[in-house]
Length: 176
Image (cartoon, rainbow, N blue to C red; front, top):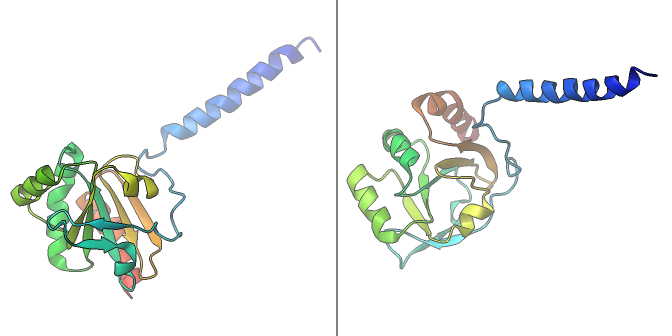
């Protein structure tokens, strides 16, 4: 009985240490999204390049596509941008941008200077669509299938390795 008062805190310490140790080997970019395998949230936004034209999620039904959340103020977006520009040249799937909490002028300058990999870039100045998609921060990229279902979410910049090892194989499978 005397040792019981020491065993309970010791057991709690061991359990807590176990959870912390497991966390050390987890990848912080693989935050599970509750939207995977669920319909992508609906939206209709104006285009960055042409405020008179709008695009909505339902306009993409019937095709596999990428939604890349970016902003001109985002340093990591600059890192991933050349990868997206090169990938867009393959024509494997259309890439749509979601310009998140940005200004139209800065976004246009950024795309003009660095290249434009997007079929269209959608303007989300207040971030409401980004919030619907569960955006933690930019960049983030979603793979969305023909039925409008989110199949993959990449948090952080897309690297050539992520593109080659995760995204392209999934796109091939979804386009088969």
